[in-house]
Image 1 (cartoon, rainbow, N blue to C red):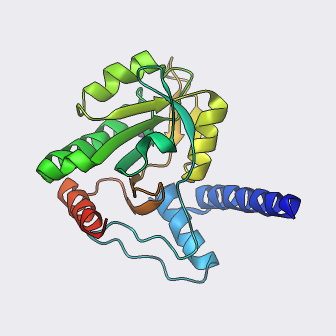
Image 2 (spheres, helix red, strand yellow; image 1 turned 60 degrees about the horizontal axis):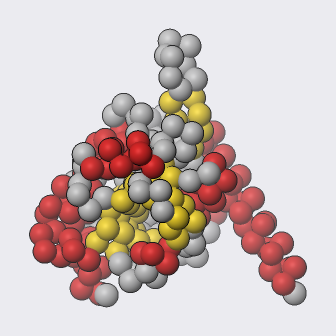
Length: 224
Ligand code: NI
């Protein structure tokens, strides 16, 4: 029985991996891989493409994101989802060498935190690196401090990072450009609003207005 459950989980993981691949290959002109993923996932689950709203993108029914992870924070301490239990999180996956997208999105999270005022005390902004090779705890400590005093930076072994990214269906890959000495990371770019149970409540596309993020967080805080 247990074996069957494990096998089923494996099938789901492989399936979602393939879906990300399909989203990557099948994205339309100018369409982000994340948007493409949602569109294809929604179609597969027999739903219409969810419309973006002030509350962020609603999850297609049956699609669960988030869950357990095992990583290392910016002080070098091992942390799991249990360390954040009971708190709301604004989670973003990226890398500190990112020239533009990551700083923009982390800036939006910081602005949303500021807009929340006192209520921000119940929310932890979390930056998870998809580039553990370069993003050591020391590098992260310096980086997250530039955005928000409450921001937590997480990294880990390549396997730990891969597992966390899988739980959030985050795609990432190393990219070498001939004209650049340093590699870049291609990665999906969503801000996740995670509830006290560790599950993603809603997600925000790149360039979402920080006030819209704050609004969605307020709504979730009211709901508990
Ligand atoms: Ni980036």
